[in-house]
Image 1 (cartoon, rainbow over the protein chains, first blue to last red):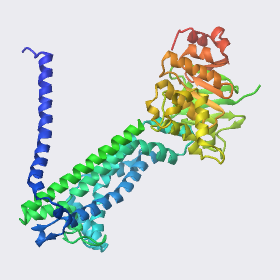
Image 2 (image 1 turned 135 degrees about the vertical axis):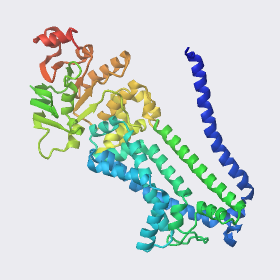
Image 3 (image 1 turned 180 degrees about the horizontal axis):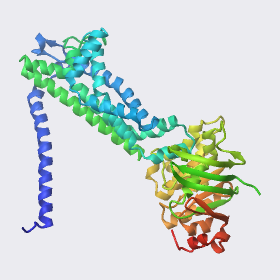
Image 4 (image 1 turned 45 degrees about the horizontal axis):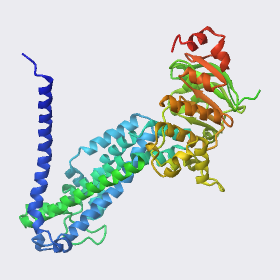
Length: 279
Length: 251
């Protein structure tokens, strides 16, 4: 059989890859535009700033917006320092051994567990055993556990990518290990660490199963960390599942999508700014 | 005779590999000493003994003595930070931190803690003047160091070491990533710096060794084959192996 000429193979390959890219972007755009088209017309200032009425058939989603940021924000605020510290320990303070293997293997296993299992654990441990009940705090702690492996592994990769010469040079100038980590390694790894943190924030915001069992689904505005709170994603789920109001469900979904897009845009902007500053 | 750095029967092992064999060498202050030899002969390893950088890698064992101003650098209770401040190192590739020009120069200073009465901007300016970089970068002290040319980056790395006022400068093939013109500039700089600092340079480039150094050491397979005045090493070596190497028969 005669082989195809390289020029034709090249054209076929390019067409093929382009089609795949188009399909990927197309699907993404279709989902986003479909939801925004169905949801945006129902979003108004009142919708964003009022409390829901009659189980969400009418009224707004203000308590859910606040609840979402409280639960997800607190979750990441707990998980990020823990995760980055673990990553620093794994990369800079130990040699590879059985302990690092166990920690890494554990983190990878945790990353693969379905979120409903985290929800069940959080419900049994934080809500019941520790007596937190259905609360913002219980939800945040559960989500923190859920995103911890992602933060550890992305931070670890980012720290490993920092050139060895930076470490060597820092030692050569007489710095201690801690000075090297805080002044050279972490600043250089910051863009990668931020990516992991923002990804985790996105996952926390859009989580439903784990928060349903731990933060609950109260419609009130949470007044403290021990109050139950319904997040946007859960509100959307309940509105559509119970057939309460598809208009408000799509409007809620639109708000959720806009928040996630804005967060990602912010992360990119921060990262670019950082990279430009660092050269 | 004055001696700045001295090793006595220095042996170094990476695990089972015997990387330095009975090296005994005496390095004079305020001069340039070149260490030459083919790749893998242990010249960088020897250089890294002088500021104890080999310890960063696990499985390294050192026997014998290394003396700085007559005092053992492996003695109990030595301040490693202070040792590395006294014995500064410039690496093969220009490796500024991803920080601004000024922050790179002041890094060592900040690491050691800025003492009272010391002005960081003054030290930055003084260190950049010492490498003749000041006029080129004085208007971009806050811009990223990685935006400089490779030669400027290497000058910056030398300034960064000078800022912590070392007594010895260890240079591990400082010009291997630079073009010949930039190399010439760095060599001029080294001659200038040798009036104040003890410089030990590892180089693959024999012309460079003969141009800048007053003493040369030739190493082969972890052994110090010959050590003496550079002119002697290059013009009239005592050992057949040195003669073969400097005349280009290997390496």
